[in-house]
Length: 109
Image (cartoon, rainbow, N blue to C red; front, side):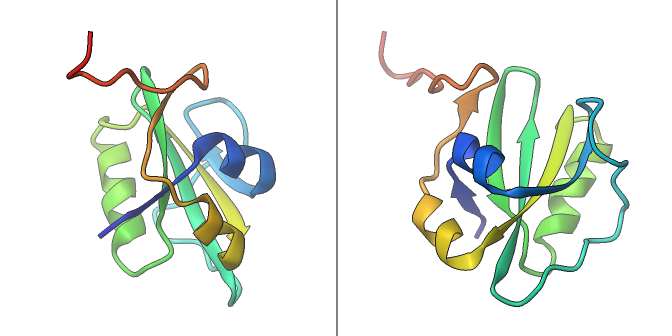
């Protein structure tokens, strides 16, 4: 099961290692980048309306996210490297709008 982290904190604190779809960073490769022991590879993806930060360190997780990017489900995909301990602290399971605001709860009006 995927781990979701706080998007803004990952973008602020993580070391950006690749990006695509936002015009910044080197183009992504299909192969998962290597990360040092004690680090986590986090993909910040967006669909043009909202974004989410997903831990893609574990085998297969990066492939699934990258495949969805290739299929056009994700419009942008940026990769960050983050300390494992800090990633644990940032796990929150939420997604946010592109402007950094929370996604409104669809059950509330």
